[in-house]
Every structure is written in C-alpha cells, then in structure tokens.
Length: 287
Image 1 (cartoon, rainbow, N blue to C red):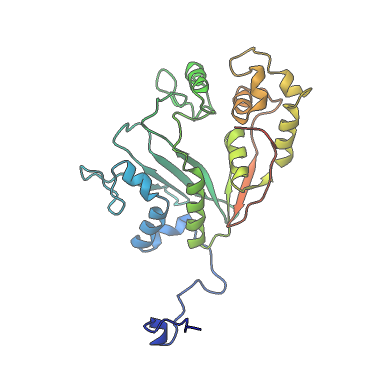
Image 2: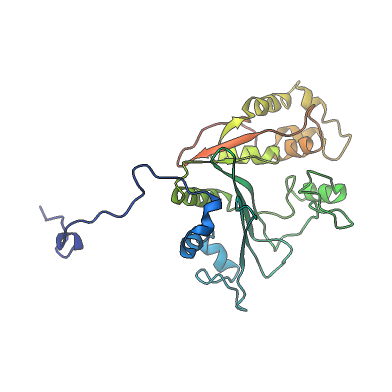
C-alpha cells in the first residue's frame, strides 16, 4: 500500500501551525465599528459581495473595481451614526440603476438587518414604479404609486417594487452575505421584506419567521378556492385579476393593491448561517 503522505509536504518539514481563528468567545463586529477597522478588512468584506463573473460580464476589473475608462464602479456609504452601511455596484449601460444594491443596518437588539437588496439588469426595459411623473419618489411604491408604470411592469412579468428584470444572482448574493456575517462573527441576520413575494423568496432561500408566519399562512388560505382573498380578485383593477390567486407574483400585486384587511406590515425574518429553515407558507404555489 503506497504511503499517502506527500514526501515534499510543508507539514512534514515543520511543526503544524494552526490557522488563526476567532477567540473562543468571539465578539460580534457591528457596522458602526467598521470605520475603526483596517481599510483592507473593509475592502475585503465588500469584495466578497461582488460576484467576479458579474463584474467581468459588465467589463469591470474584478480586482481594481474600475471600468475600462478607469472609473471606480463601486460606491459605499455610512450613515452619520455609522449604524447603516450601503453599497452600490454601478454600470456603464444605464446609470439610473445599479447592478447591485445592498443596505445593512445595526438593530437595537445587537444584530444586523438587511434593509434592502436588489439586482437590476440594465439591458432590460425600465419601469418607473419608483417615481411619479413629476419625479417625486414613491419610496419603492410604499408611499405613493405610479399606477401606469406598475401596470406596465406587471404586464412585463415583474413583481411590485421592481424597476427592471433582475440578474438571477439572489441565491449567490445571500450566500455571500452569509460569508460576510461569518467574518463579522454574526450567527444570524434579519430581514424585513417590503412585499409578499419578497417574504416567499426569503423563506425559499432558508429564512425563518420571527414574526408574521401565521399571517403568511392566512394569506395562503385566503387565496385557496373558496377563500375570501380569492373572491376579491374580481377584476376591479388590473392588479386584482382572478388568475392571480395561483401565483406568488400575482398575489403580491393584489396585496400591493390593498386587497388585505390590514396593511402589509410587521413581517420579520431571520437567517441562521448555514441552516435552511424549511418553512413553506405557500406550498405548491409557483412564482
């Protein structure tokens, strides 16, 4: 039987030296502390979130993060109190929307929350659901609504809040976020989905509910045959068509249109690193 130990292994030439790890009781790192850390540490954390193939696809150098004209294509910002951190990956095709946008925030409960995450394909048509005809912000459709733009977005296959088709990188982005949180000694992180479809996406990527699971299950029951929400899909608006009961996206538009007896609010979720919670509040319902 051959010797399985490599003859030229470094481990055979000197005593084994364990890789440096976190202390036995690692202290979490919070966003408000990032400015105190070495710039290279902050740069590395941000770099983890930037898929190399996406950078190359849009002609951004994966090391320098510059485009062909030499412009840096990544922006980051902290709030004045340091408790919110945001990053944007820009593009040369349409500067109105970043390729990727992430906003994280420290919470009062000594955790970190993902406030917003979005990926946009700048090659796809844009729908101005985020602004009114006079240019005023709709706060992603949560404060006011540009109805003609929303109708066009719905007909194009988008979900509420989407200005463009996505890049289909969400699963990987969430995995990369887990790597960042591991580097920051955070075992869990929180999200507060702004829309019904976002909550379903998160649960299908392994998130659990800290608040709102029973509410989500009631919504699903309401869209079943004979359910009160299904009965309200009476065609009275373009967002309340009968067929919408049988898809996540359709339900989300109806909920965005105010079909519930209560506002969409208070749904909170969390993800434990490396653990898929297995929650499914809309079993068998396609996107």
